[in-house]
Length: 130
Image 1: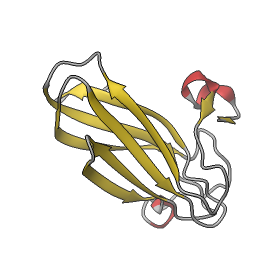
Image 2 (image 1 turned 180 degrees about the horizontal axis):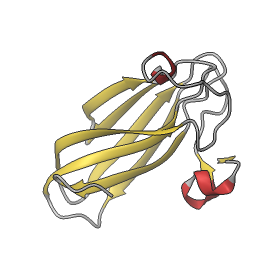
Image 3 (image 1 turned 90 degrees about the vertical axis):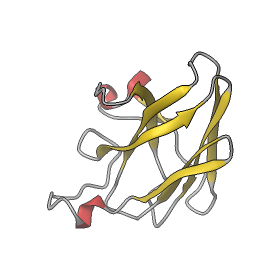
Image 4 (image 1 turned 180 degrees about the vertical axis):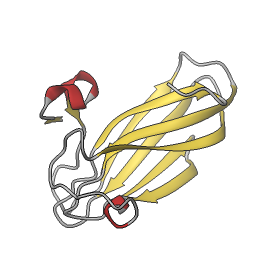
């Protein structure tokens, strides 16, 4: 776990990161409090300007999607090197089939000095934005 500054830039004041800049990180959870159905799955993460980490999202070992932390080249914003509110961002995968008891897993591969930081995952009814 990594303490995010300022603290309000992360849920619970912390995010998860890889142990080192050369090790892959894996986080998983069992979705036991969800009804079987289709959902929009949103991953809140941090995209720093000191690397281009790659993430993969899986539900029950089926890859839902892959993305790269390269928004500093796409959004036209001043890049920053810190895990904070300026680097917080989100990707949403729509219409994902989820069953009660499914296992959600995120695999983060760091790049450069960016440790593949993840804040939280939202599982929302299709079309709902939180």
